[in-house]
Image 1: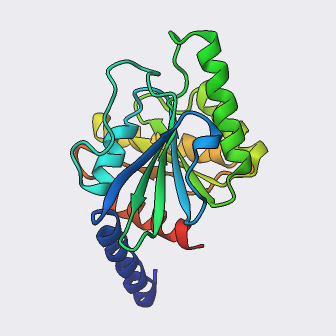
Image 2: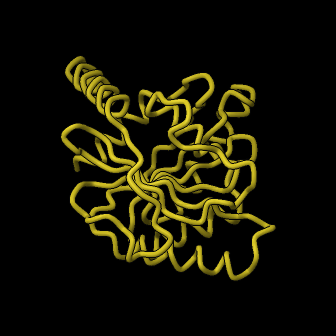
Image 3: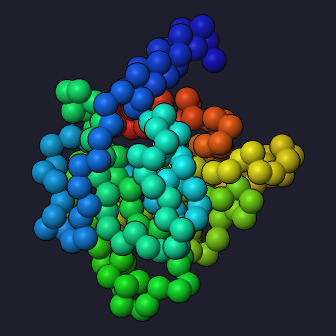
Length: 217
C-alpha cells in the first residue's frame, strides 16, 4: 500500500467511524414486503445463521450496547429490521432473520425463505449483503444455501468471520483461507474475507470502512 492509499484508507475509516457511531436509530420491522420503508438511501444487509453473533456485531459497529438485541431463542426474529444511519440520513442497515434454525416449524422456514428471496431480488437500493460465518465452525451447508440465494439474486456480498477471538491465530488463518477459497466459487461473493470480534473490537474499523465504501459505490 502506498502512502497515498494508506492516507485514503485512514480517512475512510474515520468517516465510517463517525457515521456509524453517530445517529443510528431503529426504524421498523417488516414481516412482509409491503411494510418495507421507501427505498430512498443505500442499504447494507446482515445475514447469518442463528447465534452467529449478528446482533453483537451490529452493536459493535455502531458502538451501542443494545441496538440489536440478541434473542435467546434461535430463529425467533422472522422480520427484516431496518436501522437508519446518519443525520441527514445516509444509509440503512438491515438485520435479516437468522437462518439454519432446526426447531422452527416448516411454515415459518418457508415464510422466511420467501421474504428473504423476494427482498434480495427486488430491493434496488441494496448495495451489499454481509454474510456472517462463525470462525469456530467455518462455512456450513446452510451458509452455502444463503450464498447460492445471493448468487441467483445477483446481490454482491462479503463473507464476515465472527467470534475471531474464540480460536487460536493459526486456526483463524486456516478458517480465513478456507472461507476465501469458498468465496472464489461464488459469482457474487467479494474475494476479501473480513475477520472480526465484536467482543475484542478486532476488524471493526475495517468493516465499518467497507460498509461505507459499499454504500457509496
